[in-house]
Image (tube, each protein chain N blue to C red):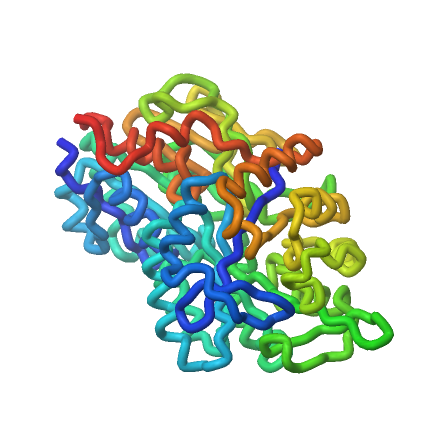
Amino acid sequence: MLKKRLIAVLILRDGQVVQSVRFKHTNVIHYDAVHAMEAFNKWAVDEIVILNVSRDSASREKFAEIVERISSHCFVPLAAGGWIDTEEYAQKLLRSGADKLVINTALADDPQLVSRLALRYGRQCIVASMDVKRDALDNPQIAVDRGSRIIEVAPEEWARKAVELGAGEIFFNSVDHDGARKGYDLESIKKVCEAVPVPVIAFGGVFTWNHLVEGINVGASAVAVANLFHYTEQSTRKAKTHLANAGVLVRQQGQSLAPVKAGLSA
Amino acid sequence: MMSTPVAIVDYGMGNLRSVQNAVTHVGGKSVVVENPADLLAYDKIILPGVGAFGQAIACLRQTGLADALNERREAGARILGICLGMQLMCSVSEEDGIHEGLNWFAARVTRFLPDAGLSVPHMGWNGVDFMRDDPLLAGLESGSDAYFVHSYHVRCDDVSDVLATTDYGLEFHSMIQRGNVRGIQFHPEKSQGFGLAIIRNYLGMSC
């Protein structure tokens, strides 16, 4: 049976791994993203998402270099996103070792780019990222361009549109829940999961391992965590154990992991 | 023996970098080969691939790589197909029409039906249940999870070709072996310790 996935998210601003709180990035967690990556690789994380949240479009090139450095140490799937607004840059990230492209603002500004990329690389390669922000009346809407522009559309409608354009997966985040330690925006995630036939990754707000279970229970195929993983030793293993104890089918790190070290026996 | 590089076939389909990274990580050496004549120098050949079957088999035939691979197979080279590379080794695929493959396995490649609420592609970590022993599986535990991404799956006519099966609504053949040729449906290069151990076992096999 297919397992529910546990995903580690690396938020990068100007090449450094930062903490994200309501889309503000003040604390640097790691000065070198490769160090963060190596820790995740040793543990039981099932996939890695790396996002460039820099507000400067000139950050593209350095970000691609970091993707390249990370991918040579990454033996789980790697999804990369941020500033993907041309086919050339998408190709650059894939050639740098990304397995999937995470696309957010282009869904609003250049939807045909999403379709072209899906046609060229396959739907499995396209992860539609959506940032939900609630208005004064608590109605969920979509925020694009690093949370700065509001589009008055319900999250489930936006998700349907993304799938029509060619997305093979939805990466759900919430501006209000990001770094707020209150768990995922379960109500919105549930509606998105019910609206689309593709896997939904829940993200934004995890502070206890049980928040992960809540995400799975409303229909997510994968649960993602950023900040919390950086501050807890053996965090991914603890998260997996909690999920397994709650009856969620997750990949366990088998004995097979132990014998692999660099170098071969004669 | 371990210093002998393995050839990774480049026929324009998919990213070869992660396979190269995995070979390097377990201490092996690899060379990306796109010229059929160059392939003749290698006794270990990895045929990777992501994309559409029809386009891939056409590329292999047009470039002469299909002939070179057939020649190496008959000469006893150990060939390892990954994902689409495994499917290309089968007799026929139903992906967007009917396409003949390399025909090294009497096997059909058919689409997953999106019934029973299962989404297609089959994407994520799923268990690999061993059917029998093989040097590729040495030291590994049956039932371990590996990372899959595919919409079509392989079914061999001869069950003795099947090394491992996986359950996704139906049971399909996730690892196959016949003589010196092996195919893996999942991505060992993205399957962490389990996948890296398979690549290490492959590199350690004698020719």
